[in-house]
Image 1 (cartoon, protein in one colour):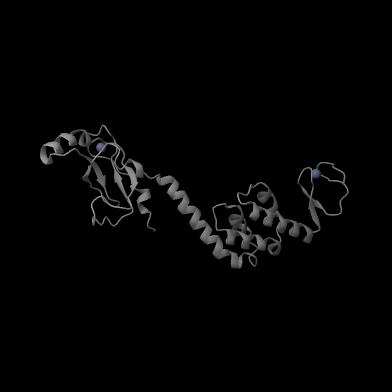
Image 2 (spheres, protein in one colour; image 1 turned 45 degrees about the vertical axis):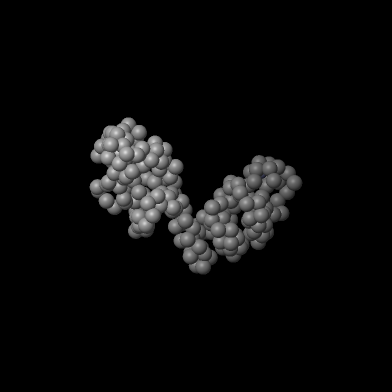
Length: 214
Ligand SMILES: [Zn+2]
Ligand SMILES: [Zn+2]
């Protein structure tokens, strides 16, 4: 598995039974040389948590300064430790959303896979990776251009509908894809009806879908 294993972990605070939040490790560690060896950790950020509520007094008495504890746990562990925090909001700025990170991770994996498939997809008549890259606005622009280049070669008109239903965030790329579709249609002696967008014969005088006459 990958380095983001922790995204599947769920932990609960033994002090308040609340679910722990997943936080990213701050780029500059509070305690230098702490060497957490992790990019994320779990922490109880419940302000009602007894460990946190009682920690202020405990630390005041013990160490004479204003701080408290939050329960924290490193990924892959079942037992955590109290971590000292100087304020109520400390650590709250780095809460991660494991679901969105998982989605990003998945998107990136799919992109990488599609890119490797580009070399063979024309021979295999596999439109999938070409469409995936063209329609993924977060994918690398060069990969998307390469995918668009293959549209004419793979010669599969079923690519037109999904592409026409996509709004390209990058106008330049959208323009290039449009030109490649025009080439593909021309190669097949087809055109798109300007009224209903159905693909029809290039020489038609009337659209057999909407009745529009040219
Ligand atoms: Zn707690
Ligand atoms: Zn029409």
